[in-house]
Length: 500
Image (cartoon, rainbow, N blue to C red; front, side):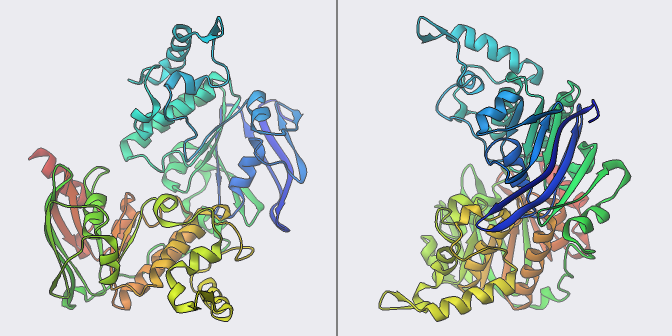
């Protein structure tokens, strides 16, 4: 084994419930290298990372760290060996200090009590390279998501990790925060630490990584030098076929169609002020702006999820009263939350229970499920939206992010909405699942449903939307349609308001 290989796996195999999810995966990570691990949701990335970090044990195959064979019984063993993991969903204790989080399980003591002076000195030293305003004695829940990620990274560095795994590290960050994080990762690389980087954002992969490994359906496909390949090849390698179009064709006659929704004068200071716009039948409207622009807040207010001080909603020209989300549903308006695990799914329940929840009235009688109807419905959903699962009794939390998102959308479609508002509809999912969801949304619009998309991914707004309304710091600052919808024009509208 080469001296510059810090971590390697050989023929890793793993099965769950009789289904093989890893089929002999071998990868190599070099010292001072940023190496991307990519693939569709369900490709086996998370399982491989969980094996490397000691969460799961392989059924077969070996892990080598610095050329020495490793056997981890738990995450603590992997951590002691030098494997650090920065989770997508941060694993911090929110009600204690930064210092206590960084040195959890290793707190300095004097006379049986925590030596806080020493703890905070140690923490300050670990935080020093980040040039951050974070204080060692700050309570973690007071920090932004970006600052909490720095605490996670500091914890890994305090363990003198040889390898750090970043799992979707920028999924909850804005563009500026994401760039700062990538600068930090570049600095960590210079220390000779091997970095395994998982992301669905190909722009990040091509910006920051040295090499990439593609997994598909539990199989190793190939390892490439990032600089010697391109996004078209990588996408084809991930999905096993050439993906000709990431975005379906746009509608050509939206302006001629009738108005489904009109919102007038929505205000709740300081989040948003005097927001008015329309959505037409069969239109995909983008509601965009920087993180903190008020786009999510105003959408939730329109749907009655949160209150607004003022504002009126008209459906098909008729004023309607929406005081709670049940009112919105009764009027044919559905909302897809940006946080699928908090607001969209029963993650501890089964796939079957989640899928059937919106349709209990239609598939049950006298409190008993009609099993025949349930079986038919599940078969229809599997075919229509290409959900991948082993059994309908699989726990929702064990499904991939892409499948969870498709199930959330399917639950809303079962309600036959007139209008659907989707907040970050493809966040944290792979390019194949994104393509399927984009096609699904365009099919909805062509069937006459009004669709509103809120997205932090500018290419998605540009590629999907027939018209765009733009927000900044709670104000509506512009509107674009047709060929005028470009990233440059959207940024220009936001910048004009900032200058004003």
